[in-house]
Length: 84
Image (cartoon, rainbow, N blue to C red; front, side, top):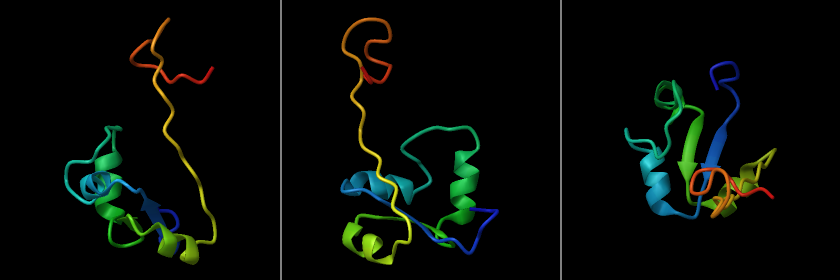
């Protein structure tokens, strides 16, 4: 987002609480350095919304991400993604 400030990025989710967290100072995930990136870009060319239909209409590119269930047994149970 710093390298291409002319590119508008809209993150959409049906979960209003999650979007509210992204729009706050308490991001819903931890990644080193992410807070700084989000704070600098949010409201400039990075937006978080539940208005999925509008975001689709505006989009030149759509990336779909879905929840991956967590393993319930075996190595990594309760922590690792169940991709098997």
